[in-house]
Amino acid sequence: MPLGIYIQVPFCQTKCTYCNFHTGVVSRDRYEPYANAICREIAESKTDGEHDVDTVYFGGGTPSLLEPEALARILTALHENLPFAASPPEITLEADPETITPKNAAAWFAAGFNRISLGSQSFNDAELIASGRLHRRADIHNATKILRAVGVGNISLDLIAGLPHQTRETWEQSIAEALALCPEHISIYMLEIDEGSRLGRESLAGGSRYSAAAIPTDDAMAEFYESACARLAGVGYDHYEISNWAQRGRRSRHNLKYWRREPYLGLGAGAHSFDGRTRWANAHDSARYVALIEQGTSPREQIEAVTEAAALEEEFFLGLRQLEGVDLARIRREYGGNGLSARLAEIDERIEKLREQGLVEFDGSGLRLSPERLTVSNEVLVELLG
Image 1 (cartoon, helix red, strand yellow):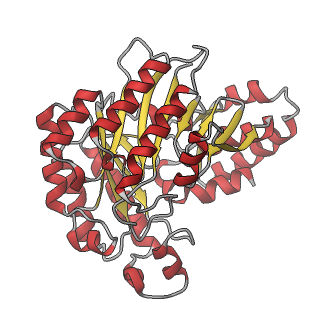
Image 2 (image 1 turned 90 degrees about the vertical axis):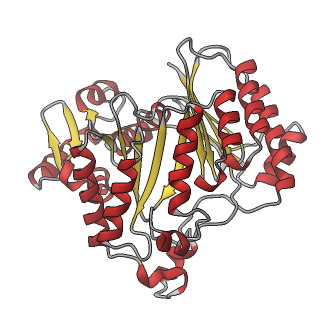
């Protein structure tokens, strides 16, 4: 089975108010040692050739902050140390619109990046300012034009439903402008309100900082999402995962690995890995990660063997994110003889109750979330798995 490579770059120019990731704003002096550490980790991660690499994804953070030469060097290290599939790999770079210049874009494309994921989030300047984003609407249009000019033929745009000050009108305008740029892929995420971000903490505390009082209601967010579903379907985008749409043949090959429980190797601070039997993560603090690599010590921690029972749970809560759903017949075959027959029987009973409520669709073999109930997917999964 092919292998996906994830490269984590946890650096940002500023911390967005809604961000709950392990990222930070650090001196640019730390970028080069970090890139060197990743190259060294790659060299020490040589595989036995069992899996050929067919996707590479640079995520963050803002990977486009690294110098193009450093990004190219990391790609070179991957090719020198890991076997790649014969067909062209999908190589993605996450980039903020304001970091894209003709020079950078040309260097990325020459190095082998053939897919760019733009952190657009919104096409409304008031929403971007309130969220702490550095780019503006015009930067998204300019970035897309630059990427097309250098030959990038696979662009993904991210949008967030529920940003402070967002209204039905501004949301519809953001969708319209995104579609006008004809990206091959679009991701739409619902704003998360939790203790992990400044905006989330402020909102939960009932405060008004970070424009917390201007967050749309849950019902409004659901309406924004459902409106986007209809509009994207109307122009031919394939809704293949709860938060993701693609033109024909342009699904994110790398992200599909996560939902299908396929193997991937994470490199860099905080990166996660999965080999089909075990999950592990690297040290989250970037300075500590670099220090461990320089000392010749493995940065891996949180190593956990995936039990059969845990794997069964993953089959559902990862697989059901895909609109095609899961092959329940396959799951019964693979897990029914592993002492999990009682658990499967319990899940079958819950499936029937959810089907009666119109929350899932089941044809005897395939199980999927009802397309019109995707906004409550988390609640459905809790009901299913208990």
